[in-house]
Each structure stands twice: as structure tokens, then as C-alpha cells.
Amino acid sequence: MSKNIDWSSLGFGYMETDYRYVANYKNGAWEEGKLVTDPNVVLNECAGVFQYAQTVFEGLKAYHTKDGRVVTFRPDLNASRLADSARRLRIPPYDEKKFIEAVKAVVKANIDYVPPFGSGATLYIRPYMMGTNPVIGVKPADEYQFRILVTPVGPYFKGGVKPIRIRVCDYDRAAPHGTGHIKAGLNYAMSLYAIVEAHELGYAENMYLDAATRTKVEETGGANFIFITKDNKLVTPKSSTILPSITRRSLCYVAEHYLGMQVEEREVFVDELKDFAECGLCGTAAVISPVGCIDNHGDEIFLPSGMTEMGPVCTKLRETLTGIQMGEIEAPEGWVVEIK
Image (tube, rainbow, N blue to C red; front, side):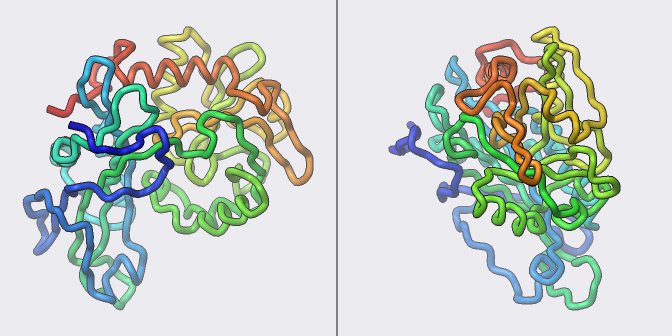
């Protein structure tokens, strides 16, 4: 039975649920994980996560489908990406099959927090890993903890799918994000300064450019870009330093195989922005959030799709992908995993 929650009024915030999953790494091996009720993490003041930020996280969701099942979307890709992230930060990877089983276990234990179909809300799943033993020298920790928390959430951006304003950011991507394949995973601490500044100036997000030439679009602090051309192509930036988004990968597949669109992954130059018909930010939390205006240092670029509502192509992409996630449209094999 669902919890007595006003699902329609949920924002994107934390609500404590009944269970979370915990596994510890000690003496060179991961111990068996388990469900626990205590939401608090007690660590030594010198733990590696505090001293050197040795931590990574993932994000995925669970849903009620139209026919009453509870499912999650492509968790194998989250498992793989978390393992890549862990290796980059010298954290022992958590077994990918055990990751999927842990996701199933924690969702099943909190099944009453999965919002009902059609409510607009979802159960957000946050797996994360951190160095837990005291480390004062600059070196990896010897002990780690893998945890999964879940929390019911509403839309990521205020206003749901209303178009947002973003700005071209002056900061180099190396400052907010790190470099190279560290973006295989998620650790957003260095992007906080830039995003808070953007919010204070009235923007919903930052558009980061490549650090080498500052002429090519990369991503935002927490999402990838997709663009729709005036002749109905989906274009997405190609770069070795942006997050390998599961949502973006899925949207590109949907565009090509469900909607018959041409898809291009290529370098996208700032000078091109004025020529696109639609722009969207895509990620687990938002799926697609439409961009209506891009402020390039005082030069405001208004997309033809406008500031009133999501453009028609992004709307169709979003409806198709969420239809697959929610069980209304047949999914490609392996995309939807039922929680039993």
C-alpha cells in the first residue's frame, strides 16, 4: 500500500524512507551487503571521503507502470558507469550483478514509496561509494562503503517541462568538473560554485564550453545537451570529457529507431546555437528539460520553440522515452527491469 504522500506536490528533494542498502569493503574484499533502517552514516573525522573527497555516485529511478508493475530503467548501465567511476578514483569497483540485485532489494523494501502511475513523481535511487577509514596522506583509502538510498521525488527543475533560461559559463570545465574520464562518473562538488552563481543571476543552468578553444558546447553541470535542427535532426555534442549519459544514449536510440529521425553525434559550436529549432537538457532526473533562451554573455539566443512550452520534437522524444519507462510503449530488450 502506498504511503500517505501528496505525490503531486513533491519537488526534487530528500525524504527519508524505511530502508537503505549498505555493503563494506575491508581486508581487500567486499562483504555481503544488507538492508538497514538507520539513515545515518558514522565515520571517523579523518575518513578519506572527508579529506580527499574519494566518493562517487549514480542516479536512476523506479516507476509504477500502467499495468501495475514496479520497474527500473537500464540499471546495468548505471552499474557499469559506477564501476568506471570507482576505478578512476582508485575505489574497488562493486560487482555489477550485485549492484543490480542491491537496487532491486532496496526498491522492493521501500515499495510503498514508489509513486503511483500518472502522478508525475518517481522513486529516485542514489547508489554511492566512499572512502571510510582515516587517511591523512594523499593516497587512496583502504576501506570503503557502498550504499543505496531511495527517495520519492517530483520534477528536477521548477515548472516541470516549462522552458528554462541558461547561460554560457565563463568557467573552464576543468575547474567545475575535473578532466578526462573522471566524468565517466559523478562527483559534482566542483560545479557547485558555478551553479549557485547561475541561480543567483536568474539562470537555471550553465552551458560549459570546451576548455581548449571555448568555441564548442560540452554539457551543463548535471545534464547533457540535445539539439533539434530545423530539418528535424537530433544533434548532440561529441566530446571525450562529458558524462556518458544513459538518458542521452536512450534518447538517441528512440529518435532513430522509434521516430525515424537522423541522429548526429558531433562537435557543436557556439556559433551554431542560433540555428537550432529546439534545445533540451537530458538526464535521469529531468529526462528532458527544454531550453528557451541561452544567454551568451549578453547576447540572448531565443530558440524558435520559445519560452512557453517544450518544442514538438523534444515533446515527442520525452513522451516516447517515458512511455517506454512506464510500460506504455514496448521497450527494447533489457531496458526495463521489473522489481519482483
